[in-house]
Amino acid sequence: MNVMEVSEEVLRAKLRTENPEFQQLEQEHRRIDKELMNFEIHVYLSPEEELERRRLQKLKLAAKDKMMDMLRRAKAGHA
Image (cartoon, rainbow, N blue to C red; front, side, top):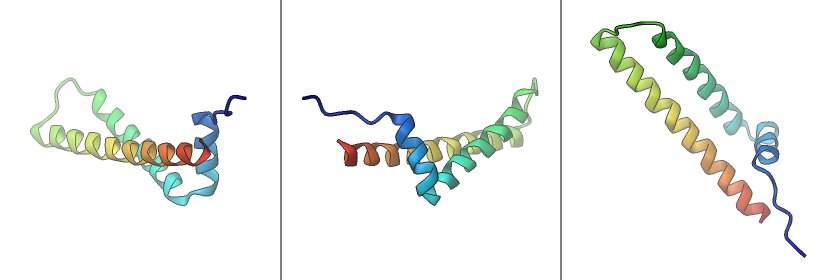
């Protein structure tokens, strides 16, 4: 018989309800995304705004990387 694979969305939902760190990372990711959208309305960014935009992009990516690592570890635990 085939081993049943646990879908990423099921694991994500489980982590949302059971893991406070994952919840915090998702909230941070969404908050940063909203902040980055504010930069999208500008045709031109000042050097300071550009630095802040890049800083936020790095923070958003770091949060996503941590969430993906948590998903990989959860998936490995269900394999």
